[in-house]
Length: 636
Image (tube, rainbow, N blue to C red; front, side, top):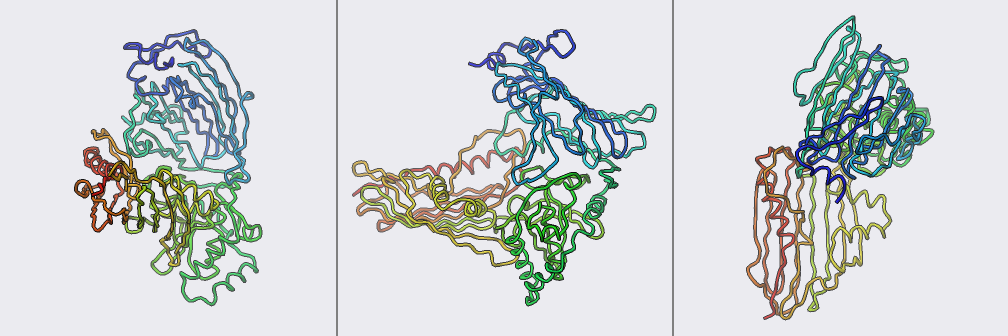
């Protein structure tokens, strides 16, 4: 049993003795309510920002974390990012043992200094200072203190006092001081109370504070923690960065500022213009022109991240990308827009928050983006283009950027738009299996899988990134059939329509020795390897909402020829269920030695209230049960 577990089970109150820097040893109490379910306790966390002008601010961070067990060790690592706009002035970290004795103290010069190049980023001026104490005797405590000078206020940090479900908080505060006339903007999310605002001697002070927040047990299918937990977003009403000035009060303000950064950067050199006309002048359909130019972009450029100074927001011009044949997401999108405009097609760059990051808040204008894409217009229709991908179909956005709000940049400034939503009609998976089982229990089968929409994304990625050998290995592991061997594999795709809902057809020949168990006069096997399979879920009440992130449909059809003389033991299995979260149906029959099973599964995307959880549990658990069910056949 670890020290952490012993510590957390020692009565009503757990004790730690912390020796904070410059102070005598003082007992500090962690109540059981804060130790329960926690891997780390935020003893104290303060963030103070002094805004001096639209382009200058000082930021002071200090925290004290007590690590309770090995799952909290990552919180003991101290690190900070800095770049041209954020200068790290000082940093100090101190390690204490369980009795509050100081074990080690480090300063800025002791921290490792890493660049953040890599992962597609060729050059960036962002660096990170990091230090790991590597201590593993629990509980232990780490304090960290840093001061930073900000040169440009286009972005201000977000404040989230409780960083994760399994972290508890004793005390956390945010304090911002600014000149009385400075237009600081902020928005509170699930903040318990009101922001305290005071003013003295021409300085306005804003204060947020929370405390005594216990860790919470994770519940299945919970929404992202960021959607559930208290946080505060900040934005500078007025700002100046690297000589560029602007305001951040409405989305149109951001659009105007970004548009100014893009100004004049969509000019193509003469030979690029000539190439556009060679490719498109003979085409009469704008969708076809878009597809041709998008494929030209994909085949003649590649993504490289270069983020230096204001280049984090300002793209390289179109001529640079044409001549160098590379660019980051902003540069490639801007280049794509330039190609389209030369062909007489209206198009715009779009700022977006990609990946699994929380959705932007459209009611609070601020810099919430991490990516850029492009959109072209044909009459009333729009064709969305992910310009960093060399393989996506024209008009298709995968899971990284689909179904979310974004900021479209146009001549008037900018406005919020929503990217395409792919629902159950687009996201489909159809599996057809035909095979036979020998008298020895061996399986030979032919499989045809049809994927469309978001359901094909993973397979398409594998096709693009893996060798054939590795892809076949991955598909073998996916099915998880004992003794399985894929003897032949092939695929074909269709993305001819624009905008496209891409689809892939996968053909597999496989064999599996002893797929069925022969025991006396019985033949036993699990057909659920070829059905929708999912883990079981706990049939207990949720205390918070839960989320299903995607709508999709799956249809499965299995036809198996059994050895002569066998009949099913018991009735064929049939079942169905429907609830707000989706529906499921399974039907089976046996005739003239042939087993036929058909399944249908549909999931409905959404955030559901906690009271709906028991119905979802019954739904998913039925699917899980049928996927694991064994069928028994008896030889007559």
